[in-house]
Image (cartoon, rainbow, N blue to C red):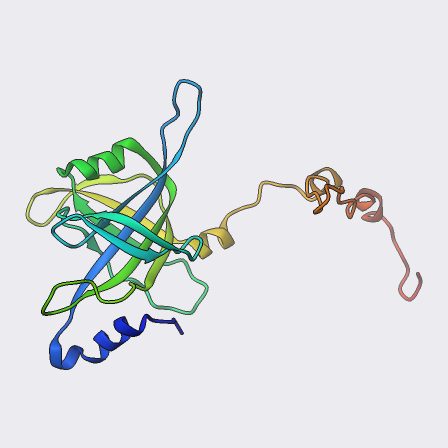
Length: 215
């Protein structure tokens, strides 16, 4: 069960009488392209389904700390339905934005988004004041699957499509290139820099044949 902001929860309860104005917030975290020295920097860009740019405070899905970010609006942001499952299966969410918006071009051309992190929040606006209600809860934490692609919407407009997969499942299904060996184990240093010798005799112990019931 998620802990919801009390104001957000109250707005949900009052929705049958007062109505509801849902919005989606999305943050992409990627990397700048390497400079002449090969250096890269981590950068993020945020968007939402509103019409104007807005400063919004959210709880980071990466470090669970409050973070005030500029969310760019007017980009025709569309987020596919977010799966609400409890099984250990790979889930996907697709994000679309207009390709003609300068900030969207800055995102897809100015940053390397491959395996970049994606955070999505559910937000609510007050039906009367159109102000944000409470702190938006995190609805999705994933990574970009491949590179953004340009496609056409049903109306013929060019849009940028970014596919994402849930972060936890990516980590569980990712292959580990490290081999089980003493040399690999030694790379894991302790708090004081001590070498992990757990696998020191792994090579020889693996070939031992100990009869059942003997030490």
